[in-house]
Length: 190
Image (cartoon, rainbow, N blue to C red; front, side):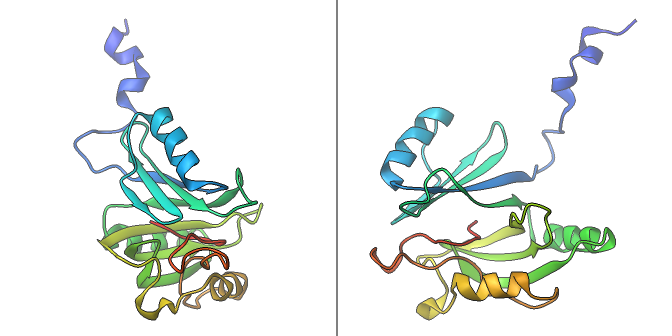
């Protein structure tokens, strides 16, 4: 009695008229140029944003934000995970939902990292220690960090490992042997 439309479950995975959130996968890579070349061929599209030591791909199908962070010697490892949502209201809704579920969050609002101004929060306490961020991009930025490069990974790491509710200043730290605006050794990056 089922029609071919009713049995084709893949056609009903999400509603195309609604803005769909997408999962973010941030990878450490040894060589940013080599990684960009590979992923451009793999997904059939170029990066949406390319800066020294950094690239991100906004892939439509499957909905994915792939972030590449040049960290020589760390290639092939996970940097962090995230979910990019449509706007600050969606960030708030997810933070409330996760708080109701008993998951702690470290809040960051109007922060700049990874060449983007963002509203976000970090989910803490994942069983494997992986870092998850829920975020929206408010605007593009010409700098990896905010004004004066005040944000550093060591501060974020300490605050993510501290009791919930403390604000953090975001991402990673530029490589000591690279340009001042190079990629990170830590987390974030919309």
